[in-house]
Length: 178
Image 1 (spheres, helix red, strand yellow):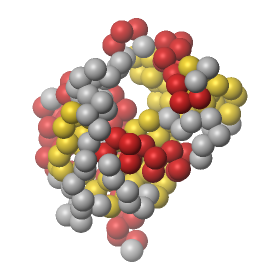
Image 2 (cartoon, rainbow, N blue to C red):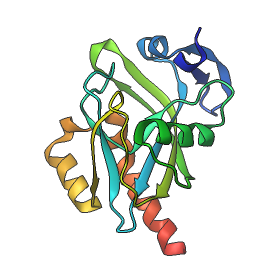
Image 3 (cartoon, rainbow, N blue to C red):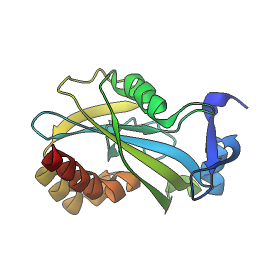
């Protein structure tokens, strides 16, 4: 089993229970550890990406700045930094925002069942995208983004639609406390 093709299986308390090939975990719908990064610019706009057309699920859909799974033995925050660099060619500080568990059917008989750790950060730099992972990107205001999700929900990934309102609310609370 290749370590970078494996995901960390977890229980509902995010305690590791084993390893499994990523595709197999999505075929069987087993709970595994994941992360999602939401980067904002100084104007408060969210950096969204369009997933590459040849991704094995949720291809060509708009989503958060980046997301993936930590490798076995890798801390989740470290994995978020690694993946932000690999997908978007970016480095910036990230802070944990919250975690949630979600279960959702995908195309091709796959199931997303993840314990998702959500991180946020701020950067005004333009991404240098990895075209194997990302086909497009843009910064969007919260109002424009939420309006577009209402009008065109099929253009966005399932996990992004589940998380974005909570991320926006928690981020607003963070800014208010500063």
